[in-house]
View (cartoon, rainbow, N blue to C red):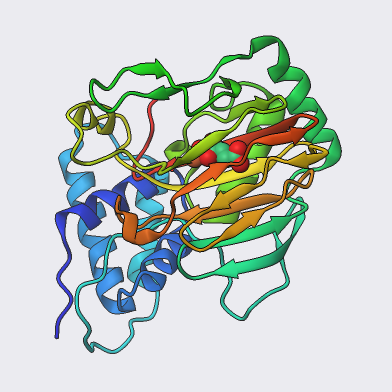
Length: 304
Ligand SMILES: O=C(O)CCC(=O)C(=O)O
Ligand SMILES: [Fe+2]
């Protein structure tokens, strides 16, 4: 069977190029999503040439570089499987590595699960980075709001009793450094990420189980999706350690990830559907305080 390149995939390719992703990483993401190399290369060439052709002004160099590199990479044999989905953020866990070298940091892999597609990671943030995030966030905290999918606005939510704030993407050198590291970790452009959110849970505070994607059936969702499309993955990073309680729970699989400073849990949802088993929540903090930073990844560039 021949794989058919969808308009959605072409749009995705152009967005990765515009975000500055290397041709190799774009190709790798497509191959991992199940695209044959030859089909992926043709799709890259076609999508980028169409994009360059539609632009009056000279194209950005990164897009041209992707097109050029795509043409020179060796072509694999044609063969067939059904058309795979558009690539999604992923951790490179092929070969069962116990650590991932991100250039500025070596992250350890503690748990990897297929469904939900999830991993527990250590050493993603240094103790100093965790403290600096807490210091910068503390004066800006407000009672957390959640996106109101009925209207697309925001609301106070009794299921979510934490205090929170958002950093703007790239707003400080610390945020830039962390965002660049996360982009390398999950092979996803910085531009497709929402601003980093910091949450503080006091004793008794919790975030009841929920999905991070926007409910496709809710009336306010189309408006939310205009800005970057669906959420496709989440990284929850632990900035401190509560004395007791406050784990991140995944009720569908009976998993609870205990907060350890600098550690993180990554989970991805290829479709906005409960079958991803990504139902999760922040269990009540029983003693002490819990601080986390959450990075949500969108399908496309999230305009800040
Ligand atoms: O606090 C946690 O452990 C989970 C946070 C969360 O689910 C979120 O920020 O979406
Ligand atoms: Fe969540």
